[in-house]
Image 1 (cartoon, one colour):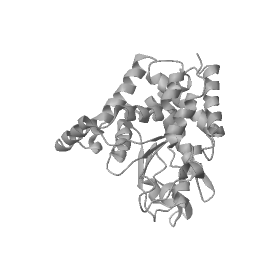
Image 2: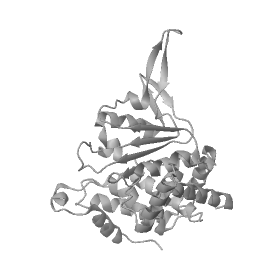
Image 3: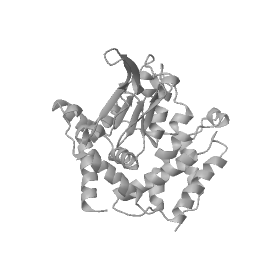
Image 4: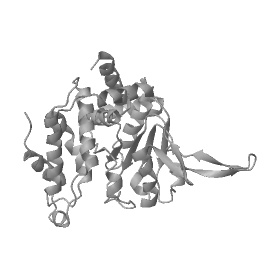
Length: 312
């Protein structure tokens, strides 16, 4: 990786850390998802910095930004936009919704019904929306960052599996360490606001980094290693369904991004090991028997991966 790319990635990470006082690994994973061209789901209890993290990333890049705070009465047109009749021109005109941007923050996505949640599906998969039969493309960089509270909290609607599968990663921030929480208090006392965060790069710079990620070499034995992991999830009876082909491709792309972030132009099995949990876990619902036994899905997945032979 050239020095310019390494410096730019480091600048983005450091800029996020100005307003987000949290685990450095979380910042790494968020940037990895950005460079992979994927979408991100942040799930955790209220007040741990999910929205701040998403806003910090968006403000670090000089690009268009959209946000919707989801609620039970949010409509699909509130996201995708709508067609209205212009009495002056006597024509129907499309008024873009907030999703027609480069980084879209879907705040508390599980507080809105499935019909509205599904309005994001086409945009996340195809980078476009269809309104009244007309398709509108989203140009350039596009990333959805969705936040949600755990489903056992009242007033929430679990995301359907088809939509979960479209998120490249799912991260849980967790409670900060003592050092991070003290740092958060200092930010608060200094009145450090995410809205005042300056951008450190342009959208085109991120698109170039994404192209560099795609050029990272993935050898045949590493591809087979990923496939064996995916196959193992499908054969595990404690999972209702195994990982999809989309999950396999997401894991490969995320590993390429992780390699680039670690100054390598090739993927190692360690890249796969670092990312299989955030990439795969949310795609693997537990079977009824496993839920009744109170099995931990992360423990199951870790045990499963340990049985897959690592290429040398």
